[in-house]
Length: 429
Image 1 (cartoon, rainbow, N blue to C red):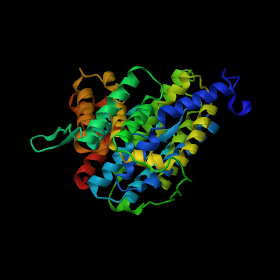
Image 2: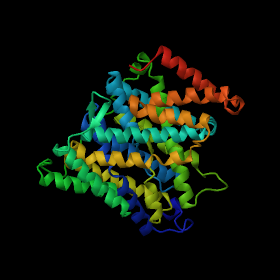
Image 3: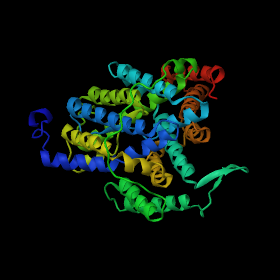
């Protein structure tokens, strides 16, 4: 274990790594509940998503542990799961077809990880678009949480109105939200998970949660429930690109952030970055084969780093705890079916994703408007892909007419043309 993870070289020990692993797991275990709740609402069988979530998390995190030796955990990403559900609902597609788009995005990510095109893509796309995409997704999932809990409801006057506070589920959501906000404000580790736990206890005593058991044998995983042909039949190229682009940005940004906190960066570069990215790409590919949305590196890994985690042993502990969680499907299944327990997590995680807004140059119009357009269009159209398309069309055009066309990388003009053609000839239904 010492030789595999180089514990002494990284100034750590087995006990510290185990504590760090448990800390990271506690802060991100909510995904085992939230991911099945979101995807099962899109028609994917709960047990299938539950097992796929755990399998992708274990595969990606073990890969990260053994080949990259970083204390960074991988699991299906927030935002992309909500986008998956919205594509199924808005375009009337089967979830098998949308899993096909996830598989293709995962395979492309694996291939890109071996080339310099990945670095070119990350470097060429301006910060305002990257921050706009992340913030737009934040609003997108926060709105989903508000909608599924009944805090906001359809309204004829302006499409959206305030919900009925006499509804038990809405009241339970608000109680859970304020409990979780209190825990977050007090900087209590695992606040999201503990908030869900507290909400579940309230739901049990108010009769909204009933269960017959805590543990059982794991459900049988379902393999390759995918329709790749449907991706091409329905021209879902923008969806594939959206999954790919967001996963690359999300993972790269998280990896760099965690690496900087842990002191892994060397002259502005991250050692073993290719292995770390392959961990995510592999988890996304494998996850799609079993039935879940794309995976990403989790920013919650910073909690484990803060607890002293410095090597892949931390990640290995996280993977082991995820594997154990598959024996608790009965209670997780019941919790996932109560929107009030999962909605506060969506709302608060949405807030976390708005951080990049402060780093957009709002005083420069040709930088600000494309970001604004992305942030506006994602929640309003219930489509991450549409938001990305609008941003990639308006950015190069505004730069061109403002006399800064030469400052834009050619790849942005290429994407602009592709998205214009896609919107004209292959619009989302």
